[in-house]
Image (cartoon, rainbow, N blue to C red; front, side, top):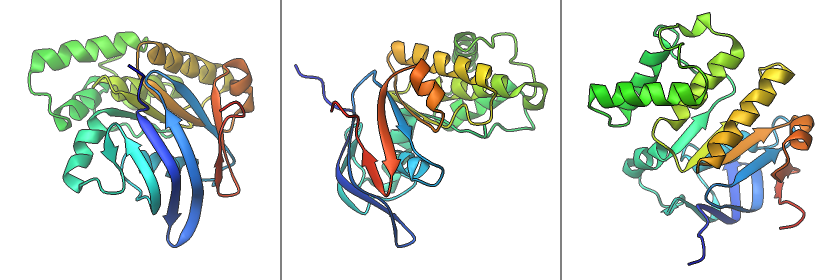
Length: 226
């Protein structure tokens, strides 16, 4: 059987406040694929990601994400969709008043986990996966930027998502730390989650080649060989 795309956008237009952000979008993501989205600040990269998890509406075209039609998805189905997505933000968005483990437990309770032992086991698994197994008791402000981003990635993979959306995950990090974050994301991709990563760091694209879509002049330009 031929593999089906888990995201498929055809002739999609995205508007915000009556301004066209991107139009004529053709985009496809296959299971386990690693895709970059590049472009200047303000070119529409983050807005594009927001349409995938239902925070920004799609004006026209055909947009399918994990079997959901994003033009007609019901509000009550969005939480179910989001449980199958992991989101990594540039500015971490960790809860500063609780420990690393409590941050992860908060997300698990919000996404339907009930059993404490199951939660504790999964927290240990994801912390080990991101190389932070001894940091569960720490508060976010006791961690470096790179360590905080690893916790954000651990949070994103708690529910073994089909897709991870990483929005400028290296934007606030120095070059070496940024590289290690990309290596970690590529490892996670190798274990089965498809990843879309936005970046304007051309060096990363050279060091870690992948399929690249470019946002410019209100268009999403596909990779040259597609």
